[in-house]
Length: 149
Image (cartoon, rainbow, N blue to C red; front, side, top):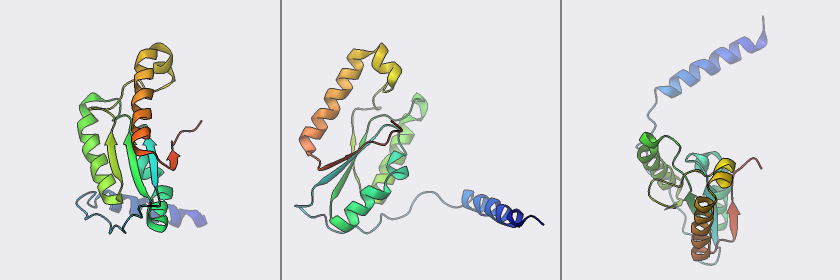
């Protein structure tokens, strides 16, 4: 018998059980006080969900070093009809994790990709200026920008 068959079968059962579990409504995690001298971690999240996907390091810095974590939401996804709901989900995730949240602009930035940088340079420059303004206001000690490049 294949030794992985039982493992995969149990994994599938657990994933099916997880899909039936509630996905919201949990109280926020207890928040240790942030240290006024510890500084700020800025997590610049191109799409929503990055705060959860790469949030382990910022969460650890908040818990162990007392740093304040600020998630800067650049976009809210490309599907206009889902942007408001995605931002609500993002607010809930940040609240649960104990991250501050900055919405760069209502509805998020558009065309924040290589094609948009090339084809809409004025839009790109405006986005860069807005993020630079946020960084200038918050003056983070650490900036995390999850991106494969």
